[in-house]
Length: 338
Ligand SMILES: C[S@@+](CC[C@H](N)C(=O)[O-])C[C@H]1O[C@@H](n2cnc3c(N)ncnc32)[C@H](O)[C@@H]1O
Image (cartoon, rainbow, N blue to C red):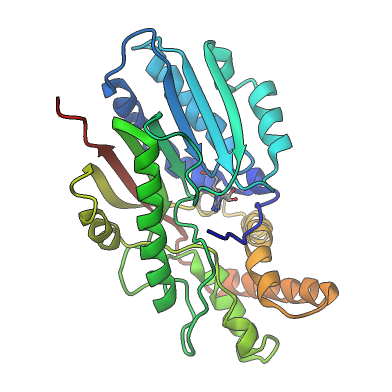
């Protein structure tokens, strides 16, 4: 299946919110690992899908494996995967050099795969514990929006999301051993008819440019993020199709204050809050905006600057809490009945 998104360069510096959300499920992950039926000296195979530049994976797995090691001593392999053009130099540097690296626990081995997770990328029945944080909501193709649709969860995105999630679950389940777990944290939305709070920057700002005629309707049609923020009821509906293959351990919506917002509430320092959001949105919006524009490179950069001005305006005019919205989904591939 074709996949056209690029890696997110600079992601490590702007993804503290995702890390804080993922760490909330550390205990769930450890419980899953502990309950896998594996003799003491056998290899435990872990896969991490969509690791980006690796910092969040490194911290999360260092914490998970530290806790796991208090109970079991199995040798571990972990395979970090992302797109071919991901910043693999940074992933390798961090894992090998960081003081926080899980490699320091000993008897843990890692590898990386640069290949879209829309393919089966690991052998059938080989993974004991599959993990993915803020990645499985990515879509295989960008669905165009219909006229009058402005936000994130529009009609065609939903159909593409359903199709992609079913495909992803099917191949991840093929890779999992019977009795193995898939733990995923994905972008979610709290209310079915409302976008996540984050979209006030990602979509409303570009709509302002559309309303002012700076961006053409034909371009806005393709200003689409390569992702879909699922509602818990949608994932539950999708999982019904997998009833014969999985047990659902958890499928829950959650939200936490975005760390930059929480820091702003604590310090009252608006300039720092603004700088953090602006730096993050520059990284996050660039790919979606540039691929939707039929312009010279110079014009694209100018329009990104204008979008960033809108982000600043929106920050000043709307000081409502900013949340990280997510869904946690934990499923277990049904054990073999002997
Ligand atoms: C928002 S980042 C999440 C990174 C990290 N897991 C975290 O929790 O912070 C999403 C990552 O998923 C990757 N990704 C998106 N689509 C992908 C695909 N089809 N195959 C592999 N990786 C993909 C992106 O390249 C990006 O690095």
